Length: 355
Image (cartoon, rainbow, N blue to C red; front, side, top):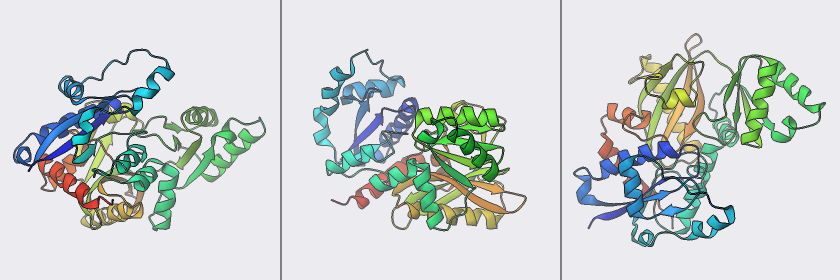
C-alpha cells in the first residue's frame, strides 16, 4: 500500500521562494516511477504569514512556482488561523518538510511534527536548532575536535550599548581577528545579513546591521581558501558524497551570488588531492554525528591550499533541493539519482522516528 507523503514548503523566512523551488523538484521526484507506486503526494503550503494552506492551494503554488500574495491583515486577525491546519493533515504517513531558514530548519517545525507523532525527513529538534545557530554549531564542532577559523561571539547589547563599550568591542575584534573578517547573525541562513569588512567603519556598520537581525552575532577571521562542500546521507551510519567546489567572482558567497544563475560555478567532483578529499569526507561525517543530525545535511569547508589545512565552516541540515542545488548534484555524481535520493530520505525518516 502506498504511503502518503506530506510535502511541507513555503514558510516564514527569507528563503520562502527557494523552498518553493525545492518543493517543485521533490514533487517531480515523487511522481516519477518507481516512486509513484510507493508514494501518494499531498503538498501543504505555509504562507509568509504562517497560515497553512490546503493541498489544492499548495498544488497551485507548485505549478506556478510563485508564492501566494498575502493580503494585508492585522496581526491579531491572523493568529487563530495559524493553529487551524487543513483537514488533509490527518492523512499523512510521513512528512517531508522542505523549509529553509528560520521557522523551517531551526527545530521549530520539527518540534511541531514531533508532537503529531508522525515520522518526518531530516534532523530532529536538537540537531536542527544547532545546525541553524552558528554559535552552538561551532561549540559542538570544537568539542568534536574539528578545526575551524578563529571567531568571537558578540551580543546585541554590546553593539547597542553606551559609547564606552562599543569601541572596546571593536578594539577586541581588531586585535584578536584582524581584517578582513566576516560579521554574521547567529541564526539566519543563506548568507542573509552577512558582511565582509576590511575597515573600522565597515566593522561598526556590519555589527549594527547584524544586531538588527539577531541578538547574538558571530565574527569570523577571514581566510584565503577554496570553498568546498560535501553531502551526507543516512542516520547512525551516514555516508559522504563526492566533494564539490564553488567558485565565484563576487567578493564572497553572498545571497545574490548563491541564488542568481551564472554568478557561481560548481565543480563536481572538486579537483583536489585524494587525501584531501578523503579528509573532507571523514570530517563531514564527524560534523553530522557531532550535532546528531539525521537523513540529510550538507557540510561546507575551507581548503587552505598553501598549508594543506581543511577547516570546517558550517553544516546545513536542510540544504537547497532544486535539481541544480549542490546537495542532489553531489549525490547524482556519487551514483544516486534525484528520485532515488528522495526515496532514501523518506526511508531514513521512517527509520529515525522515535515515538
